[in-house]
Amino acid sequence: MIDPQPLGGAIARILRRRGLDPAAVARTEIPEPQLRLQALDAAAARIPARYQDALADHPEVIAWADEVRRAARPGPGGQPGIAKATSLLLAGPTGTGKTHQAYGALRLLLADGVRLRWRATTSADLHALLRPRPGHDGERDFQELLRVPLLLVDDLGAGKSSEFTEEVTWRLINHRYNEQLPTMLTTNLATAQLREVLGERVSSRLREMSRHVRLTGPDRRRPPTAA
Image (cartoon, rainbow, N blue to C red; front, side, top):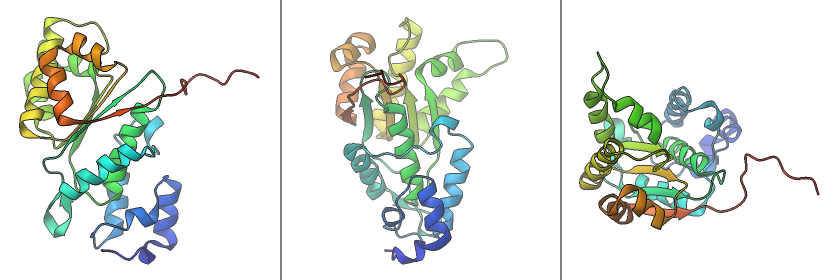
C-alpha cells in the first residue's frame, strides 16, 4: 500500500482542489499517483461541467465505491480494473444530489486508481439514441451500453413510458443483472413507483443487483427562501 506521504506537495494540492482526500486516494496499491490524475483529467472531458468537481460524501455511496474497488481485478502494470460488482441505485426527490453523488463516486474510483471504461447517459438520451432513424445503427450503440464495465443511467423512469422504452430498459437492466456489471442509476421514483413504471421484472432485478441509497432534503437547485 502506498504511504500517504508521497502524495504531499503538488499532487496533494491538485487532489484537494478537485475535492478529493489525498490520504484516502493513497490507500490503493498503484505505483504512480500521476496515473490517477491523468485518469481524472481524461474523465473531466466527458463529465458534464456542473459535476466535474463532484465529491461523493454520502457514507453509503463511499462504501459502494470501496466495494467496487476491492472487487477489481489486477490489469496491466498491476492497476486494478472493474470486475463483477454490486450496482448502486440512488433514489430521492428532485434536487437532493443524486447525480452529484453518482459522478462523485465515479471520480472517487478513478482517484483510487481503478482502471475503468465507463459511459454515462440519461434515461431520455438512452431512448432517443436507440430510436430507429435512417443511417444510424442504434443496436450497435446499445451493445456498447450493455457491455461497458461501468454505466451511469441518470433519471431512470423519467418521461412517458411506452412499449419501446420498456423494452430498452428491460434489455439493459436484464443484461447487466445477468453479467453482474456495476451500474449506477438515479431516480426520482419511490420503490412502489419504480415497480409501476418499470414493471415487476425490472424492479425485482434492481432490488437484487443494487445497493439502494435514499437521499432526502430540500431541492438544492432552489434559492434559499428569505427568513
